Length: 163
Image (cartoon, rainbow, N blue to C red):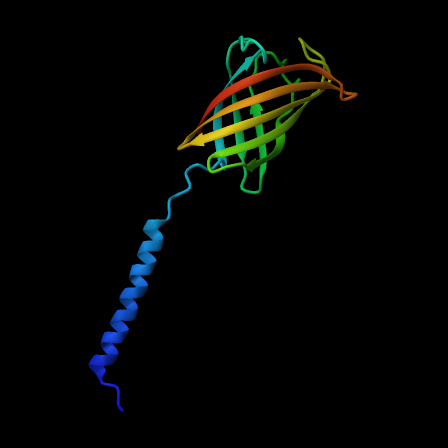
């Protein structure tokens, strides 16, 4: 039985429309993941006493970059550090929920000055992202060269995505 041209054309039109509708529903049905951590963030940090939550000095700025492969790097302008005393931060991060993440980073403290001794600083953060902002609650620990804890504090931070 020969296939008529009109019949073939209607089947082809139906297939094309089905494909277009499926593609449109996929494109519009997906939500854009704006609660992602990847990218660079301008961060305002406030150090606190972990028990009383009293501030430990004025807030200061930091910059953090979270890469897609789960690494983080950053720097700070905390005025408690002498120039050149602290290296940049390096560490790892991971998603823990739809818009929540953890990040852990370390920096070297190269020489003693102020309240700090030579060793490392470790920052462990719990981060919650909403749109182009995040809030972080962190523990901050300082270790001497024998890996003994010498100072600890807590921190809260707010950040906006660097554009």
